[in-house]
Image (cartoon, rainbow, N blue to C red; front, side, top):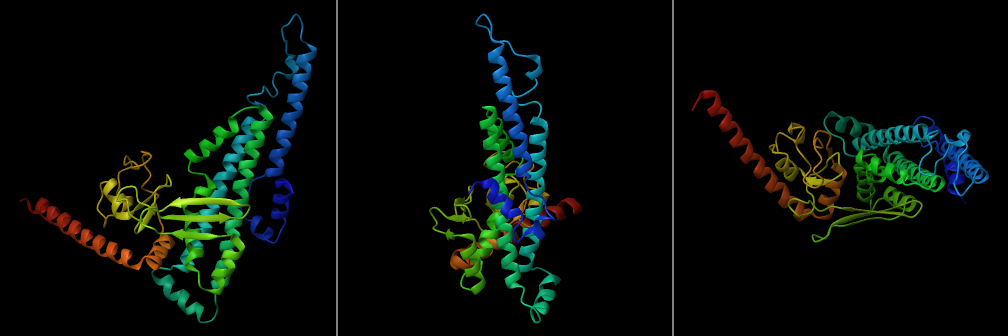
Length: 339
C-alpha cells in the first residue's frame, strides 16, 4: 500500500478525535502542489523543444515562471512555509502532550498526593499507556510524511531543495524523530516492563531496548513502519553513562553536573542560570541551556537498571553540590562583610 493511502487511513482511523485537535502534515494537499509542478515542468520542457531553433533552446515566456528544474517559484514559498509551520506545530504539540503524560507517571509536589488519592478510585495506568502509544504513532507518521514529501519534491524538481530543507529542520531543532521527548517515551515504555501494561506497550510499538554497558550505552527504539533509532547514552564530557541527564535544546545529552560545568554555573544554580552565550560542548551552538529538558524517565530507567552506578553518582553529585554551595556562600559573605 502506498504511504499516501496509509496516511489517509491513519487520519481517519481510531484516533481521528485526537487528530482533529492537533496539527498534522497536510500530505494530500502538498502532493497536489507537486502534481501541479510536474505538469508545469512537462509543459515547459515540451514548449522548449518546440521553440528550439538553430541549435539554441528558446523558452516561451509563458512558461518561464513555472518549474525550472532546480526550483519552482510558484509553489516554493507556499510549500516550505507550510511545511515549516506544520513541523513546528507538531513538535510543540508532541512535547506538551508527552510532558503532561510524564507528569502523571512521575508526579512531583502536591500533584503526587493528588494522583495517589485518585488511584484509590481509578487506575490511570492503562490510559497512560494508550496515550503513549498514540503519541508514538503520531510522531512516527508525521515524520515519515515529511520525509516522503521532501523526497518527492526533489524528484519532481530534480533539485536538492528538499534535502536542504531537512537540514534546516535539524538546525531549527524540529527533527521529529530526534526529539528528547521521544527518548523519554522510550524510557517510559521500558520502565513499564514486567507489568501487563508494559507488555501491551511493547507489542504495539515494536521493540524497545536499552543496553547500559559502560563502554557503549545505547537506547534502541524500533518504531512502527520499520524505523530504527539509536540514541547514545554516554556523556561526552565525563565519558560515562549519563546521570541525572539533561537534553540541551540542540539535542545533545549530558549529566547535569557536566552540563553545569560546561556552562560555568554551579549545580545548585541549575542550567537556567547559564549565560545566553554559553555553548554546547559538542556542536558549539549558543543559547542551548535555557530550554534544557530534564530527562526524568531516562534517569529512572538508569536507576532501575544500574542501581550501584546510580547510587555512586548520586553520592558524588551531592558531595560536589555541598562543596560548591559552601564555597559560594563563603565568597558571598566575604564580599558583603568586606574581608
